[in-house]
Structures are given as structure tokens and as C-alpha cells.
Image (cartoon, rainbow over all chains, first blue to last red; front, side, top):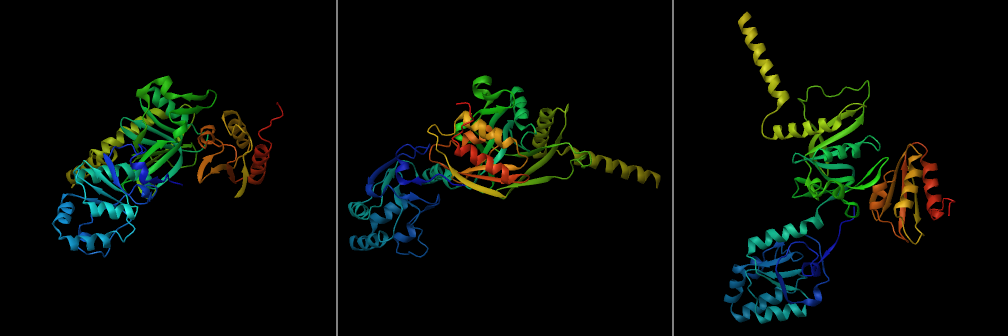
Length: 318
Length: 90
């Protein structure tokens, strides 16, 4: 899936949603460079002359330490170091704490078209905001056919074949006070390697198609409380037509997993047949998921109680 | 699996009505049918899916079908798109 690209000028033209408080002071002609990684580099070691493993393709973050170190260097040495530093094809430099570099730094950056910014944030805060702002551009993304609903705070992704009733089920959940994130097309992003977040394709956000009614705008009909833009996915429920000969889970002791973008999520298959109230099953599944997360596993707990009872009875007989 | 690529010639692009015509044609076939635009994939049997692609004039669309009657399905959708969504009513 094609990801949106991000360029250096996007940092200052309002494209990214988080204000990094950046002020451009040099290298304006390099603003059309593409940012290709979210990772940052602290150039401390390079300033000291050690250029092995120098990650010049990343944003270079100069904190108080780096700035102070540069100021302390004797002029000849500083010139030599900066010329070496700027001989690399550096993405851009950011000085935190509102600090600024010396004239030579700015001159070299201008001549090499390497943008230099000043941010008022302190270093750790800047790095965390930076990663937050740009990681979405680099996160692995996949589109799935399903509905994503926030049920009691649990992100439930409903999957199933076309016509099995995903949208109707989502609609009934909304009617019960739960929130729609996306219907039909769910764009899923892997964030921080461990979470999956789902959202709608932008143009159809908060719209649904219901057979017989056509396209409806859920936010307009049910109000702002009935929708949300993004939700972490916690539980995957596959709706499928009831098959007479198929064995469905009767105990719920074994936990099943479904993998999306190499992340395994709890997975339940719910058979659908006329007259079966699917939304209430989904509500219960969501609550049961929350219970499990807080350490209460209904099926296992009951099984444990029964085993204890059996042990006791057996001991009595002996 | 059968696949074919067509370009969209109607000025208005694939808005609600043409999308409905595509979905209606796709629904006639039991096979899975997908539309691909710029690596984004949509289920051809879903109105919202087709609309979300925001297909404009000049877009290249790949139609991919897999399953029963896949060849006929792709042929019918290609014919529909090439006819500029003329259902004979206009």
C-alpha cells in the first residue's frame, strides 16, 4: 500500500498536525528533500570526530550538550569538524532549547542546502513530539474490508464476507450508544511495532452503506458522540453464516489469534443465523475481553472451580 | 485469477451513480472482485469501497476477479467502464 510521502517543507507549512515550534534559519533551498525515516540522530559523537555509523540521513538533533561542545572547540578544530560534518548529505539539523549555531555553521548549511531549524522545545520533548508527528508516515499500513466499532472502549474489528451483516451489526451497536470508527474500509496502521490503529478512508469517514437505505451519514444522524476518528484494535470478530456441521467454540478456554501486519490479536468467530442477536453477543465479547485483560477469565475460572470440586470429591471417597 | 486494466474517460469520474452501476454489475457474479487504483484496493461489491477510491477522469483502474465466472465478471466491468457508464437510459 502506498504511503503518503513527507518532505522537510511539510514541517513548517502546517501539514503535520503537531506544532514542533520550528523556525528555519538556514538551508531554505533544501526544504524539498523527502524525509525517509522517523528515527533521529544526536550528532554528539560526530562532533567529536567519530563518523563511523553516522546516520546522516536522519534529522540531526543538537541539544544543549552538542551546542555547548561546539562553542568550546578551538576555532581551527571547529572549522575542520564542521567541514567534515557538512561533507555528508545530511537531512536537516534542529537546535533545541531555542539555541542557535554559530555563523560558520549557518554558512556551511546554506552552501550545502541543508535546512537548519531552531525549536523552543527541550530535546527529549522535541524528539518525542517529532516521532509522534511523523511516525504515521512510515508505519506499515494495510486496508481491510470490515467495520471498526468502539464497544465499551474495546476496539472491535468486525470481519466477514460481503452481505453477512457487518454494517447492520455496526449500525445496531451505534444505536446502542457505541461508536463507529470505520465501515467497509478500515485503514490499519502498525504503530510502535505493537499496536494496530484503525481509521476510515478519509473521503467516506463516518458514512455507511446499509442495504435498502443507501448511504447514511452516521455523525449527522446519531451525533458526534456516535463516532470517533481512530481507535486501537483490541479484538477481531469474524461473522460467518451458521454452518450446521461446523464445530463452534463452546467453552472459550482456548484463545484464538488473528494476525494483521504480524501482530496477533484476540479472535472470535461468531456464527450468524436469522433471529440471533449479534450486537448483544459482540457487546458481551467486548466486556469479556476487558475482563480477561483485568485478570478474570470466566471460562478458565469456572473450569478451575470444577476441577477443585472434583479433587475434593475424589479425596472424600478415598 | 483474471485481471485487466482500463482508464476512466468520463469527465465526472466515478461518483455515486457510476459507482452503483459498477457494484450492481459486480454483484451479479459469485467471485471476489477488486478494483485497484494506485495500489489501493477496494471491494467492487461495496459502494463505499468504490467511492473511497475517488476515481477521477484519466485514472488507471485494475479490475481483479478470483473465483467462479471471473473472466465474464472482468469482461462485464471493463465493458461498463469503456462505455463511459452508459446504461442506455441517457
